[in-house]
Amino acid sequence: MAQAPSNAGTPKAGAAPTGDASTPVVIKKYANRRLYNTETSSYITLEHLATMTREGRDFQVFDARTGEDITRSVLTQIVMEEEATGQTMLPVPFLRQIIAMYGDSMQAMVPHYLEASMAAFAENQDKFRNAALKPFEQLTKQNLALFQAATSMLTAARPVAPKPTPTAAKPAATGDAELAQLKAQLAALQARLDGLDKG
Image (cartoon, rainbow, N blue to C red; front, top):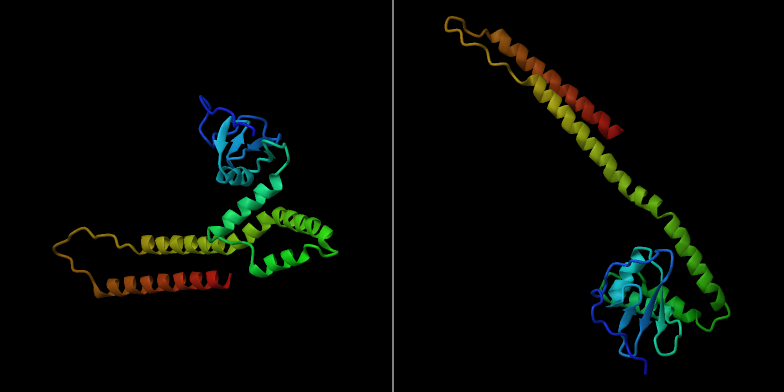
């Protein structure tokens, strides 16, 4: 049986890669099911491999004893562990269809179809994100416009404290004029809000 390399004096498990990002990282899997990252000279877990995948870092997993490429089975194991966490992406009907295709005459076409579908989805990811975020961006703009309109109205309507004049009394007509001005400003604000709703 192949012996796992010594881990003495090596980086901790999951250490940051130091090699060329365009070259697949070689991972060795030993009989004790431990995964060894030959680039960082450290033991890692399936979670580390999942993180590398999300970061776009390519890797290949080899059986340390036979040298067999077992990348597919390890990736499948990662998917199963992710599904087991409760954040599932594979609906039951889809899984049933996949199982039913094994041994079918169309089985050879399924991998190419799934690969092309996921490539198209990845290519349009930014469009999907933008479509999902657009309503929130519009709402933010409307809220900002509303805030600016309210600030303008309050600034314009803020009364200027008159200098105290013991002999002069404030005429009633002045108070009526200020009230009418405030009403006009409120009506203008309502008209702006109506315009935002229609826009």
